[in-house]
Image 1 (cartoon, helix red, strand yellow):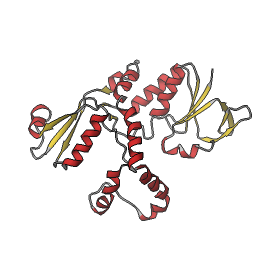
Image 2: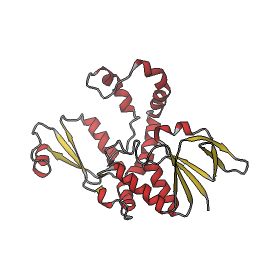
Image 3: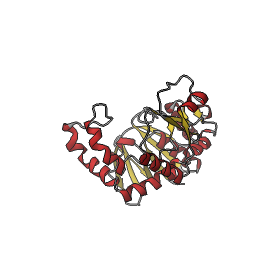
Image 4: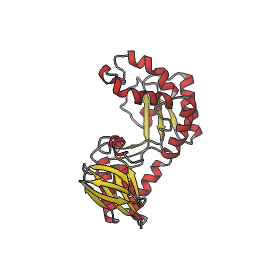
Length: 262
C-alpha cells in the first residue's frame, strides 16, 4: 500500500484524496487552512462545460490595447506590479500563440466537456447530491457580435461537441425570463452546464468522505520537500519529516512555493 501526501485541501486536493483513499492508498492531506477555504470557497460553483478555450488566445492578445484604453475595462495594470508580473505576462503571451492555443484548447476541452457528468457521479456517492444543479446556463448578449467572431466561437463549440441553442430576444422572454428587458440582441442556452449551490460545503463534504475512506489530515504548512535515500519523498511539517511514495501538490496559488523538490 503506497503512502501519498496531498498538499492542499481545496476541491482538487479533497477530490484526489477521496479517489486515492477509495483505491486503497494511505492518504495524508496537509493544509495550513481549513478545507475549502481558499479559491474553492470564493467562486460561483459553475461547472462550465462550454469553456473549452483558454483565456490565453490570439484574440485576447489582439484585444489588449483596446482593453487598456477603456475606462470600464476588466483589465487593470498597476505600474508598480509590472516587474513582478513580467514573467507571468511573458508566459501568457507565449501560450497565446496560435499553435499553443490549439494544443491547450484540446487539452482543456478534454477535461471540461465531461465535467458535469463526472461531478454527478462524484456527488451521487451520498456526498452532496442535493447541492448539484443540472439546469443549464443562459448567456444573454446586449449587443450583436461580429459575424466572424461569432462564427469562430460556434465552430469551436461544434468541434468539441458542446451543445447549445441560439435564441432570439423574444424567445428568451417567452421561454426563460419574461421580465427581461427587451433591449437585448440575442442569447445562447447551454443545456449541459451545471453548478453547485454552495462550493465550500461541497468541498467540506468531499473532504469528510475522504477521511471516512481512511485519509488523515494535518493542519500545517509544508516546510520542505526533499528526496530521501530510499527513493521516497520527505515532506517536512512542523520540523518533522514524513516519508511518502508520492506527493500531489494541489495548493492553488501557493503551489509554486511548494515545488522545492524536482
